[in-house]
Image (cartoon, rainbow, N blue to C red):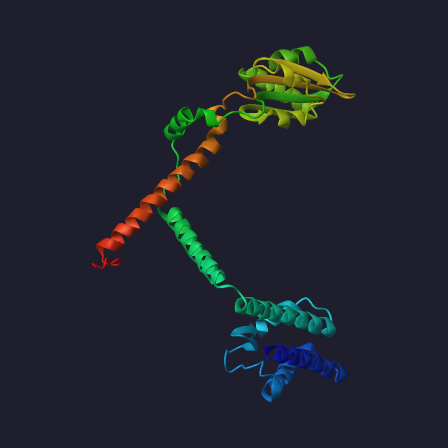
Length: 308
């Protein structure tokens, strides 16, 4: 009966749009006509549109309701009345089919499906509750001392998978002037005069320049800006590498580095350390909350133990 009613509704929609076309009605005047046709169908045989049951609903199916605002949203971008009718019909068809499939599946499902659904429903509620109390009650800050202690006790969990380095990288034309002086000043990036000279030189001649003495870069990040990977084979703190392609000279000055297989520097691992600490803190926090929840339920009589 529900499927028959649904087909009647679609017939009413098509009929309303044909009336509009034949009488040159505007789209704004068409919606009341469409709804009127649907109401007549429902009164005579379809019993689909029962607006007195749910205020504002224009389609009813198995206790579910479709509203005029839903149809308005679907047809908002339509450029012709025909498009509007097609969009509305397609939307109603999908909406109704989803409900009908759900009903059929529910009617033919095994008993254990309902248990699985209920378990999933409970898990969603529990997950949302835990997310809420973690967001509202669990401390989120990690001190430097806490991070350092965690790093010392779990250093085997922070092993580099690739080389990392600090330093500077310049890309200059092969015929750029004063290259010996530039290379000399690159050897000491702690000197303010050297840094000022390098920055002025880079501004005037370099097509690429990065100073990363306070940040770590992975070998792959630097490799993307170098013509080859040869420098990684002899990577060491204090070394300077010069490579070139057909037009440019690449100068890489290494002030510090760690090689793959070595422990990460604590500042490089800090983001990962914080995530691990917060993850462990979350587990402990939720365990304590569960115990407290149970103890409170017993204390206030929510849980009753019936003696035999």
